[in-house]
Image (tube, rainbow, N blue to C red; front, side, top):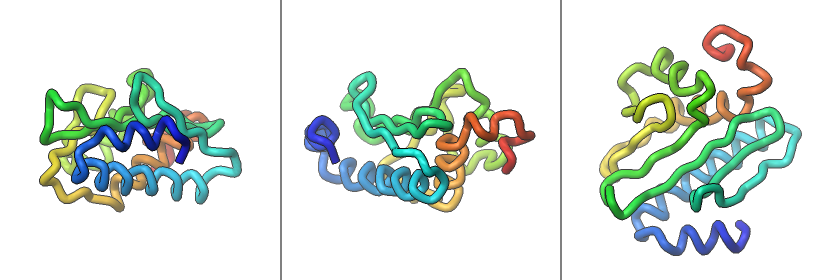
Length: 134
């Protein structure tokens, strides 16, 4: 983990940091499984951000203004969130076409979330397929 990302995680409450570290590791694992390209990890808009060459950026964050929630963000100019809604309905809570919203008390449906993350990290290779090839 680079210094900027590490410092960002240090700003999160411990319980949030643990959850977001699990999501971060899932993104890393998916990128390693689905792409030969290097995963770029950086801060964008002050949020941990992840992308591979043929994917779409995935970001996540927790904000003090909503202390019991955290969000995973996707590019709103893609069909990602629309596809997630079609595939998984109300499995997730969405914020428009740009984010999944989780409560700190939620049990994360990891199988479904990993599938969504995989679609995002392969987006530019699969965007022409119906339901992104799901």
